[in-house]
Length: 163
Image (tube, rainbow, N blue to C red; front, side):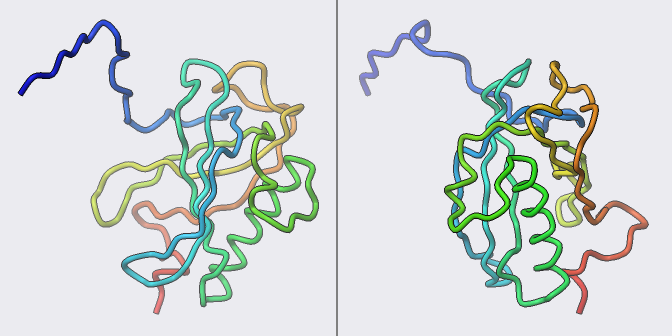
């Protein structure tokens, strides 16, 4: 098979390891309503793109269970979306596309995936661009944070996994 390929004309592939814990300046670059293959429940899938620092261009993925049948799970997602909306100074939105291209800070945590045992990124808070530190990985002076369920060892089960 002829390829006629020159590696010098292309960048190296991206590193897909998880980002370190900390704050990142991001913007929403993609959103989509998806359905979970395992549960059949719909959710809002958000893609954040890091805007500066050593990880500029890297993607962070976040799923909000806004359409979940369990009230507690849906309320957790609504609280997280409300916190994100306040961070970007949008009190009301009629479409998820209104979240796009507005800089804000997101705090990343790590959690252990119960099925694979691998560490995963998890959002742990949001802040407005003005509150975001000048350097990625620092701490904002004032931040609005969300409370997320710790799914690590010894934690109580997440509401979506309870019977």
